[in-house]
Each structure stands twice: as structure tokens, then as C-alpha cells.
Length: 120
Image (cartoon, rainbow, N blue to C red):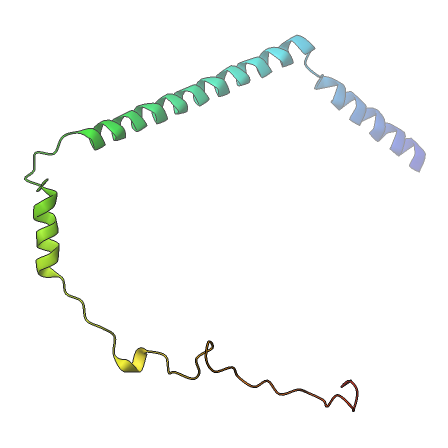
């Protein structure tokens, strides 16, 4: 009884699967070519937009200024020299003098005496 039910279910599932037959090769190939053509067209459109935007940015950057910006470098340098000032850092920020490596050699203490052997 159980085997008959399994056979019937298998027959019904095979019958349902045959109704949804696989498309032939030509139609699958044509659909793939159409998707490829659409993808290529989108890629070309995005690339063209990027080129147009980059050309527009370069053109705007190269556009001559007429907005009263001072172009004279001498006047800019004079303004910088007149408006800025420099002060030395305070002594608290400077490092403390401990020893001069060229005149005062520090004494390095050894870990063991020569007669006693190595330190393990």
C-alpha cells in the first residue's frame, strides 16, 4: 500500500515537471544576448555621463575669475607679513637638559661581574 502511494506521487510529480519544459537553446541564447546588450548600453550611458561631468568640472575650474579676487602675489605676501606674528614657545614646553651625548657619556651598569658568569 505504501509503495503504491509512492509510485503515484512520483508519477504525478513527473507529469507536473514535464508541463514546465525547458526552453530551447535559441530562445535562451537570444534572451542572454538581449540582457548583454542592455547591460552594455547602461555601461556606455554611465561612462558618457561621467565624461560629460568631468569635462564640465574642468571647464568650470578653468573659467576666468571676475569676482574681484586679488591676483597680485606681492600684495598677498605683504598682507601675510603684516598680519601674522611669531612667538617662541615657553620654557616649560622645551625639553630638560640631561646630558650632552657628545661630551658626557652615560655610565651603563652591567648585570653581572665578569668572574661570576652569565645571568640566567
